Length: 348
Image (cartoon, rainbow, N blue to C red; front, top):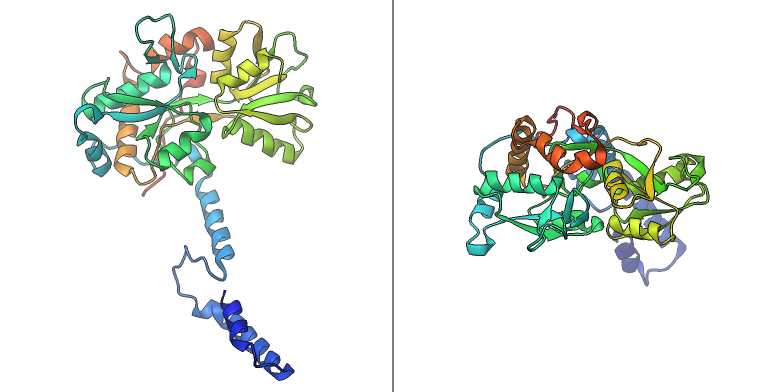
């Protein structure tokens, strides 16, 4: 922009000598720019901004070596975010939580439960637990069903206080939202018809049509794998859907050959349709966390304290929720799904 203004100011001067003078000034300006630029302007977007951005990205990548550990230490102290939630009046005095309503055993409506077919599942249990701690009432929750690719926008824009929706903690998401400590461990896995020749995440995927949810870690993992020449090379990844359950429908209709998603979700889908099964082992390790706004430090700390208590609770805690919802689909051994001992590396 400075160069454009400078050239505009030279219009009408003309002559080779003038242009030589202009070039000399430009060289001098370029040499002086690093000296003249003020220190501490990490957000500077003028000349040299790309270099600053790369430096910031490099630092972020280094700090995000273990994304599941990039969270704040637990605390029971109240803060502005929690006070804002508590100060809501009447019917609005609720914790607003973004959830799924189509993930069997995680967040779904059971049509056979009678009544209003309220949301239930593992994630729903956790949302009720958080509401109990913050508002003193486990039912003081307003659930908002959001598609997979809207989890981050809904959090950033303040449409929800938090997202409890089988959401994997990763570095890219940490740039937009804050996460709690992990509350569940899983990994990407392949789901395909039992009759399929697909054997897992391997060369049998070549030429196959794979369905993933838009905005999911499954899709980003497969896309990166194709760039790296891995097992997904040659597979068709063009089929993406708003919600993960839609992939199962596409598979049932024969529109795709396989689904790639978190193993925990794939197990639930296999339980819904006995003609499909998990193929091979999980090929990643991922952790679910509760997503909140980046500036909601008090809420992040409170949720981390709640998670510690939930994991330690032997009557109505993490294990009871696993047994109630996930044992039928994932089996009796919950050890492989337990989150690791939390580490709190984020300091501010």
